[in-house]
Length: 201
Image 1 (tube, rainbow, N blue to C red):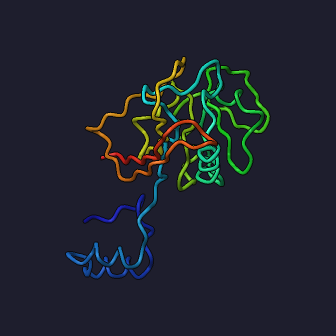
Image 2: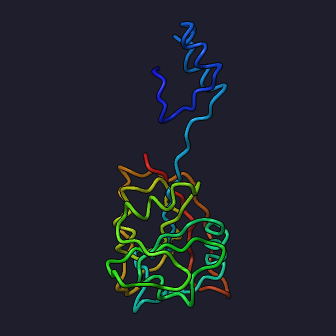
Image 3: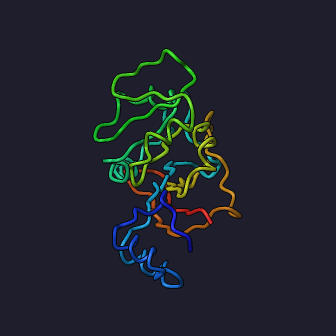
């Protein structure tokens, strides 16, 4: 295994061992013991979608599930969240304790409390130091970032709704379900739903 300066920071000890010809078949073992591998963000898509993939209508949520909103807050707090302009404008203000990033084609867009980017690459560059940045919508943003994501945290509401924004279809040839929690309807909320976690194969 060759030594790559873009992945490993060589310590004087490793440089000395390399110069003395000591790093051969034990090279990988020595590196793992002394130098951590470079980490990359776990880019995560988080959404609540109906059985027919409905997300929202008229720039608003179709249903209100308090526990799901609390879960969203718990998972995303302290992290960067990437969204489209319409999703940002559907909120009362920028979400607190999160780095709000808005991807839009509007060059003169300057929302309070958010950083504006105009390309996927610029958005990803802003979150490279975050261990788990989140993609939070809407439908077009989910579709654009699907190839870049490593995980999907999906709340599947077990009902069909009329909508004008939809979550993209999850290709099970590319994604595997690794966790699921079933929640039954109650007096507080009318629908059965599931928390499902997918990871890219």
